[in-house]
Image (cartoon, rainbow, N blue to C red):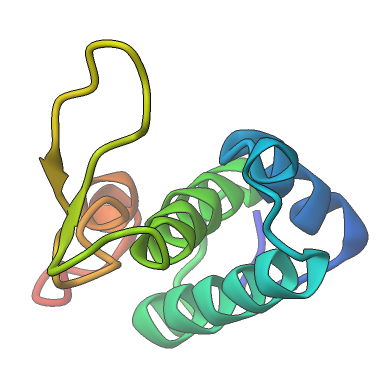
Length: 113
């Protein structure tokens, strides 16, 4: 377990986010994926503070938030279609942390989740 934001924006995290969002298929520049990973890492670090949690939990939360940030770029008016044969439009959450809250909740002191 860690007591600070150790997941950071290392190369492994950026590579994991690139794969998770299929960034190579979208033609998004590496700098954009790196920016999303850094922003997600900062958001998570700010939210959890010094709460202790397993590294893999913190990393999963960063990937989920990073993915939400990444997909905002392709959304018009908060709706994304995920181009495809039978793609159904999906509304993007206004709060990029929305997917991380349930993941992190059990590791936070009562009153913060």
